[in-house]
Image (tube, rainbow over all chains, first blue to last red; front, side, top):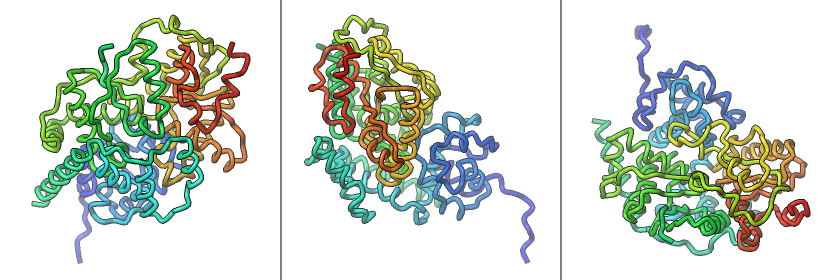
Length: 193
Length: 289
């Protein structure tokens, strides 16, 4: 029988990952709930931002990485601006998403993750966001072919969507993406050793 | 006119928010503000980048800061609130964290330039000059609420722009050219931004709250400084009305369109026909003089 642990580790591995990915120390949080109170999307979340932070500190990886919370975050930065401990909560949300992706956890709101992938793959290829191409890329990933079709057509008729991508800086952008990926790969290897 | 500002339009101002580009240029022209578009600029990466990789989200904006530096200029103007925030964040984080600065430089294969001033048009048009002298058309009959959205003022320690919970920069600017702006409590509430295409239900709810409040305080129209806010408030307004069984009919202007109108630029040159909610009725109303 294993001895019950009486010593709580001062930092969960998940908190360490958040620190590595974002520079944010969640152990500064004293649960004042300002982030939860000000969050415009908290009504849709399964865990309020402060609760997610608490779960990170407790090392409840399953709860955190399978939560909807960080995928619903609109990056409005209200929580970050109001935190009395200067924890950049919006960055914590980013770091949890990055950690979930690295650990291969299926996102609780897959279409949001699909949107990030569609947008980045579009920027990587075109240099500037080619909206029409990005929308098609998103639909190929989510299979929601008819969503917003009427609005899209109207935007197109009003000249708000371009037919042809610009491709200015496309090669340079592709190189930046590739070098960033290499630097991050080296860093991950260093962290594992 | 010699350029004083390197102009970073960002992707939206070349497509969905082209009215913001056209009207920004028109105002610069009227006020004699010299701008030059950064040649070869690339996307700032916006939310998908910072939600995926911190290094990528800082490297992409820095490429543009480097390009502006090569033009020999020290001031960058970024009208899109999201681009403005990403450029400022990149510079702030590189200054705070030498390790990440080194990685950004490695990713871009060049040294990072000296610190530049990254500005919103709200700042360059409010530099103490008397704008009322440029006014040729009275818009005093208009009652506007200024909607700043999230990223112009937040996070406050990075943006260092106005009062983060209740900014007045846009109000003061429009008031100085004779437009009435109203006090209201939704100036910096979030419209849902990038969730528009994935969790449209959330955006419709948040946008409804904003439109409700604008209507409740008696506004004729909303002024914005962000192309993403504009898409949600204008392009999705009809959808909000259908979803919640309400009727707003609130035109949404870029604040630069209102400035250009006051300075006598014909409305046909300001992209107003691209808006989903027509402003024709409001602008032709007799009360505008």
